Amino acid sequence: MKISVIVPVFNNLEYTKDCVTDLLNCKNLNLEIIVIDNGSTDKTMQFLKKFSELIVVSNSTNLGCAYSWNQGLSKSTGDWIIVLNNDVRIPKNCFYQLIES
Image 1: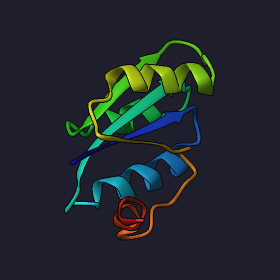
Image 2 (image 1 turned 135 degrees about the vertical axis):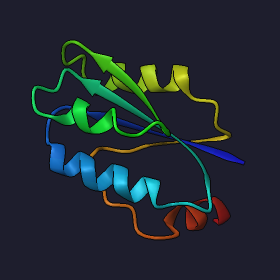
Image 3 (image 1 turned 90 degrees about the vertical axis):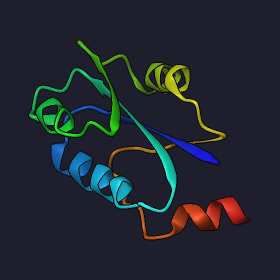
Image 4 (image 1 turned 90 degrees about the horizontal axis):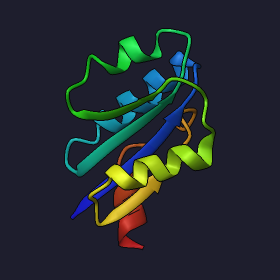
């Protein structure tokens, strides 16, 4: 089973670092991590480009959450889809709990 996680971001690099790091640490799951950058002007894109395991969509301007969600959905191939804001921290094993309930 594959889980697609869509994370729209606009600046706030520290939040994005924490969220992406938490997702990448979910090693026992088949995660597809899709990050939609809405024209960040900080170093968000430099950070995201370091990770080949991410699917990154880069918009030149802030197109808003709803548009970003749809962009992520168009890229997703998962059986389950989770949409997160970049300020969300992911506790260990939380996706197991969601899927099992």
